[in-house]
Image 1 (cartoon, rainbow, N blue to C red):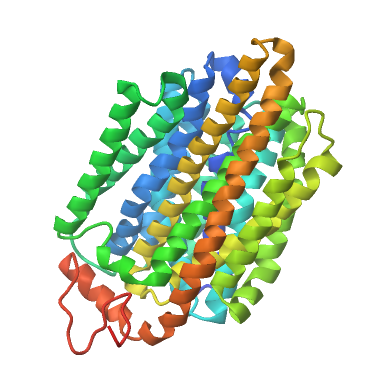
Image 2: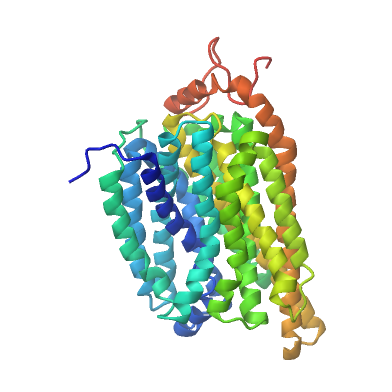
Length: 509
């Protein structure tokens, strides 16, 4: 029996934050467990990459559909459906005896997360009014998101060293079931906010296109960048993404009404989000491999080593970032956060082959965590500035797409650069086994430099593009929501009228 009392907003925030924590945690939870998976299932190094990125790509590709589902079916219903699928897929992943079963289970996990994550974020934005209350709530929600991936590495180390890597998946089952029960009992049901068909074709084309591009990036160094396989995958990815864009102009209810991107804050904030999460997830992946394969850390020691990033991101996002955003704006917080991340990553480019944690790694990880603490919260605030409640699920889906797609592409690009550098060092040494630690160290240094480049690019976009859009946003905020609702109803841009202002335009044109 459901409670008839209206729950406190803090209770609602706690529940949806727990759901988001579980979803984001699984982006990184497999990293520390990779050596154990490889040994038990007989996987190659290239196979392992797909265990890591399949989840993120499926989540990123279908989260748009999840955001639309939250608006069409109701936020609570979509959240519960996503959690049920996520828990069932986690059980399948833990029982996997082959690469195929593991990858399929990870893909289904991503699909469940794609339903749950935007619904959870939409519940936050509709529970708390825009301004200081929403900023504070988003700060706490972002603290969960920003720390979940780092905590996933810690938890993975403990579980892998204890009962085994299967339990990084099994643990999701009872947690998911408990969350579904609490959500149904404590979060009020919300009616659909929009009507219309679901753009399944759009979700399929964008996901397939991204998979093709990431496959080409991951395999380009092995196959060669000019061979038919690589060029074919790149071409297929471009064609599929082009079909996605074409579909969005014709679908009666597109996943992405293109008019949304006329709002400068929305577009630039999503671009910044893609860059910053590309830097973040690539660093988690490469840093974990460096700790285990080069420095010889155990699974549990690797998890503990990330405490510097986890703790600092949690403190900054929950206690400091909201105040900075409220006083100086999201763009300023993003510039500070991304430059801090870049500084930490540049510090890691000097890590020697026999790195000592406290002198060679800790300062870089600490700055890295502080930077993501500022950035995660600020990016979410910028994305939702002026977005009406009726499409908050869609907006949540888009920011999650930016996170997951940016993370997958960033990881693929940075890992490719790191591997190429390591191979160059090994080739120069004639393939001598004794050169392997130096090769992997220089690969890690190259990876840190590339990730810093992503963060610097994010800071530039935030400082020069997002900041200018923020200054124009107040003049557009009263008219833009109605304009956006009109575009959603008609499946595309509506003709300008005397009472509406096109998104992204000001009163003077």
